Image: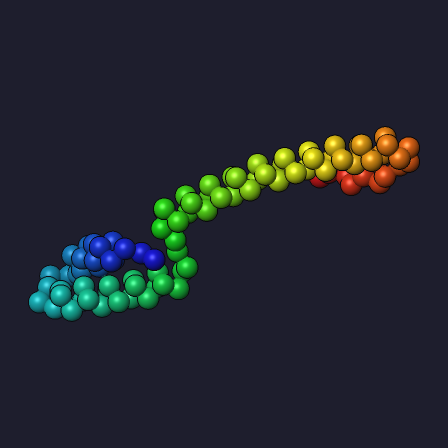
Length: 94
């Protein structure tokens, strides 16, 4: 979820661009901007940078493990083919 400080900063910056005639209700406008931003961000299903980095590392480890397993399967298929003296259908790689 988005940090509250980030929402506060965005709402404050948006309220600063309000025309001078509306400056007297700036705090109310800032509060409304914050509510709108919070609602919009909550619907976007955002993650923090830390969560993203963790998932990226998990994906990298999984990819390495998958590549190792693909090599093992290929070796086992070859051993089976050589040991049985028959042809075992192999799957074409994309």
